[in-house]
Amino acid sequence: EVQLLESGGGLVQPGGSLRLSCEASGFTFSDYAMSWVRQAPGKGLEWVSLITGSADGTWYTDSVKGRFTLSRDNSKNTLYLQMNSLRVDDAALYYCAQERSGWLIQWGQGTLVTVSS
Amino acid sequence: EIVLTQSPATLSLSPGERATLSCRASQSVGTYLGWYQQKPGQAPRLLIYDASNRATGIPARFSGSGSGTDFTLTISSLEPEDFAVYYCHQHSNWPWTFGLGTKVEI
Image (cartoon, rainbow over all chains, first blue to last red; front, top):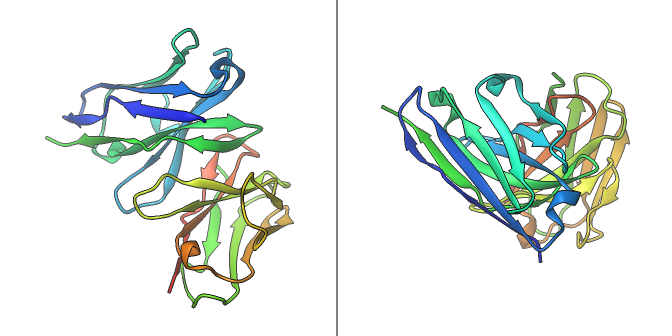
């Protein structure tokens, strides 16, 4: 059974940093690209970033380019999202998701990021 | 960025009725269009991929159609567990984008 467990969310001041983690199990982690999708409270889904299985390619939505960095450690089956220069509009529930052929086939339950002074 | 416009924003129906949800793309996405279902307090779940293929375990009452810029998700006969928010998603171009969602309510 595929499991994705996000962690690292919390309260941070504007301009601060957080690192989110997503620990994966139940599949061969390195065989799959992984993605982050966020959802602000009461709002819709926003795709954030994707990394290939071998970590040789990363893509970001425009609003986080230069501030967020996606990485992975295939030896630890873990995905990371380093978030710097956080803004109020980055506050959201952050989901990690397993990707296959462009589709987000399995999702974690999310970790909540709150950005407030 | 490709904008996905979903309509209607809210669909009020009863169990047993047919639901028709629309997603229109600002430019062609071919068939790189999928649909996700999200229930309150839960993560989204992939329903339809490549515009018309049901994901694993998805009941046959869910069907998708369309190509290019106009897509439809149809639920042939609503079950109580189908009342949820539905999002379309494209991966034709970077950045990937989602529509704002259609809420199917009783």
